[in-house]
Length: 274
Length: 297
Image (cartoon, rainbow over all chains, first blue to last red; front, side):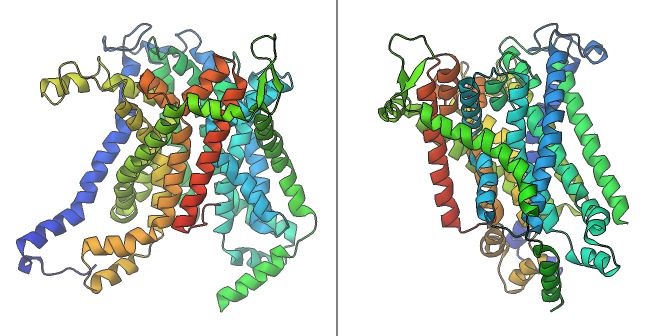
C-alpha cells in the first residue's frame, strides 16, 4: 500500500482513514469477546463449589477437577459419546475418503447424482434426519440405542468428510504426481508415496471434524439413542435443575484438548513445509 | 500453456481410468447414504399419509393415503412454521453482520496471527454446543450478572428479563451457528487478490466504494455458502428454543419432536418434517439460482 502524505488530508478524511484502518480491529476484538464469553463462563464455573446445582457462585474449589466423575452418570455419558464418536469417525472417514477419491480423481457416469446425494444430507434439517431414521428403525422393529446412534452419526458425517477431503484433492499440484510418474513410479507407488501423503492432512482434518460433529450432536442422537445417555443428552436433561460442575470440567477439557490438537497439527504442518 | 499441458497430462493420467474402480470406491459410502438417508426419507413419505388404526393402541397407524394430513398438520402449527423461518432469517442476517467483519479482519488485517485467529474462531465450538447454550441461559438469566447490571443502569425495566424470549432464542441461534458463517466467508475473502483492491484504490475509489464494488462481489460465494450453512440448521433447530425460549417461541422442530415422542403422532410429525424439508429445499434452490453460484456442491 502506498503511504499518502497524511498531514495534508482534511480532518474528516483523516478520521475516516483511521476508522477504515482500525474500526475493523476494534470490531474483531468485540467479536472474539462475544465468542468466548460462554466458554469463559463454563470454565469459570467448573471451579464452583456448587454441589449438585451449578447456578450461582458459591466459592472456589479444585474438587471438580480432581474428581471429574464425581457427579452421577457424567462419565458414563462421556464414555458413550467417545465410543460413538470414535466408531462413527473411523467409519465415516473411510467411506467418505473413498467417495472423495472417486469424485476427485475419476470420471464416471452418475457423477452429478452422486454430488446431489452427498449434498442433500447437509441440506436436510437434523430433526428430519433424526425423525426419518427413527421411523424406519421402528418400522423394522429395531430398538433405538447404541448401534442405531452410530449408524446415524456415520450417515451425517460422510458428507462433511467427502467435502473436506475433496477440497484437499482438488488443491493438489498435479505436477507432483507427474514428477513421480516421470521418475518411473507406477500408479500404485505414486498413489502410496505421493498422493496419499499429500491428501493426509485433509483426511486428518475431516476425521477431526467428523468426531466433533458426532461428539456434539444432540438432535439426531436424541431421536435414535433410546435410553442411552450421551454427553449432550446428559447436559440437556440436567439443564433444568442445574448442570453439575463436573460437566463444565469435561466441556473445558474438551476445549483445551481440541485446541492442543489443532495447534500441534499446524506446527507439524509448518515444519513439513520448511 | 504449461498449465494447459499439465491439465492434459493430468486428464490422461487420471481420467483414463474409466473402468470399475470409481464405482468400487463409491459403493460402500453411497450404500450407507442410500440405506440410512434415502430409504428413511421415502419411508417417512409413506408414514405422513397414514391414519390411526381404528380401535388400535396409540402409535399404531395404517396406510390410507390421507394427504389431508399435510393440511391438518400445517393448520395446527402455522405459527411455529412462521417462527422457524423468521427466527432463522434473523439469526442468519445477524450472523452475517457479526461474521463478515470478523472474517475480513482475519483475512486482511491479522498479519502473522492469521492462523492463530482462525483457530480462535473455531475454538469455542469445541466446548459442547449444549453447555454453551446453557451458559448463555445462566449469563442472561436472573442469577447472571447482565440482568442486574442492565437494571441498575435503567436500560431495562425492573421486571424485564432477557431469557425466555424470542430475542434470547434468536441470539442463541446466531451464536451457535456463527462458525458456519465465518469459515466460508473467510475462505472466499482470503482468496481475493489484494492487488484488485489496490487497483480500485488507484482508480480513486474510496474505501466504501472499493468494498461495495470489489470486495463484497468477490466474496459472494462465501456469503452464499455461509448463509445457507447457517439458515438450514437454524430453521430446523429446536434446542435453542427449548433452552432459551418460552412456550410462545416454539419452532417447528419443537413440534416435530413433541409429536414424535410425547404424543406418538408419527403421521403429523412426518408430514411436518416433509414440509420443513421441502420448503428449505425450495428456498435454497431459489437462493442459489438468484445469487448465481454453483460452487457449493
